[in-house]
Image 1 (cartoon, rainbow, N blue to C red):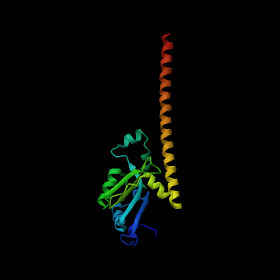
Image 2: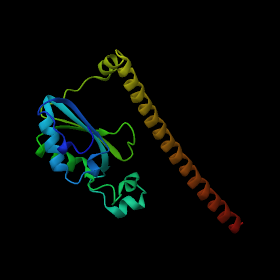
Image 3: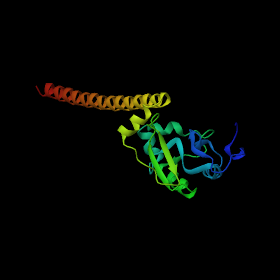
Image 4: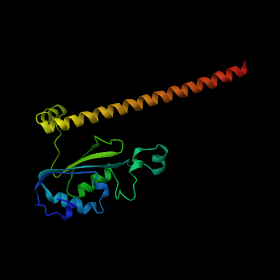
Length: 188
């Protein structure tokens, strides 16, 4: 099927999972789209979104001063709506999906969030159990490989950020030591 979900002849309650990756921020009427999605969900069904995550409460000038990665999501001709975790959670609850889990996205975690929502409570599966289930099928092994890669990427990003902070700290210490040495030479 091609086109907006609202224009499709979907059987009510027929989908176990509906996934919209990098879609929500482009919609002209997210309330109408969510109503169609909720109607199409089967009992126990879930919706999964990946969308930019506005840092709740952050002012534009603060985001600009810190060169926050979210600034790259301010695309007026493309991104119609941008949500904070709180605003998206409220929207989903009002659409009939009161059970919401929001996590950093596996990919683009510096500015995106991954959202899973349902009419029923969401089950938390321990990582070992999830990995065992994924490794049981070829397509599951691909998913596990992608999750492993995302975890490695996050670890590398954290390590790089720490090393960058260490280098900046050492550079500041070196600058202070050089200024102190120059001041002592003037005294001598």
